[in-house]
Image (cartoon, rainbow, N blue to C red; front, side, top):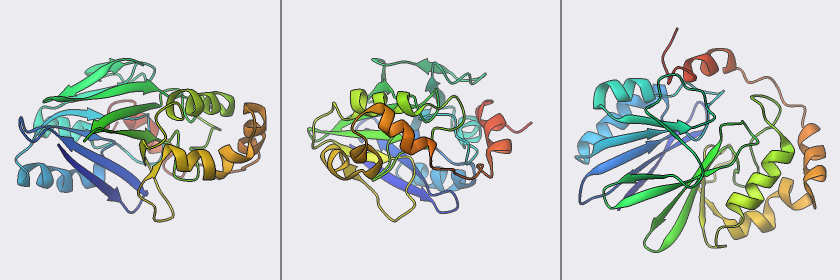
Length: 233
């Protein structure tokens, strides 16, 4: 199997490229519009055929590159059944699988940051890997104050769908703002400050409701475009 972690420095967004080296089928998780040429070049260099473009949720901080990549590669787009994206090829739910070559991703819905969040679980060399989007960061988590977010829902999602995975499961988040690249379930259980300080979902809700975060600066352009799969008005 082939795995690459890619980074957009403006929005601190991670994009993930996964591929089956035998069949050359590949998926991209959370592509960024401004990085489409980078992603196409890498696919070409590695002789990969892009099968799926997957969004972990409807992003408010960047426009997805899915529409442009779909046009250029013929790949299908995949979103949560709760996302409401008008032109998505597949709408998935907990328990569904996204297959490429001899490999697959397992879908686990993890709402709370937004209503459409999902975590994708992959297995490589016998070890589970969780692509958590904005539900769980390294020593943090996504905000819960817009897009039908709910701190109580997020608390349940993380504990029931992510922390229920084996402790050695690798965590690859949708963003990082402090130079981290990956963590594990065991580390986040022990060291994630927001989740560690909260002994129940109400305590977690108090923490999240007291953050007083600034309005996302790109939400007014990113959100409408992403609800169209990355297409501008």
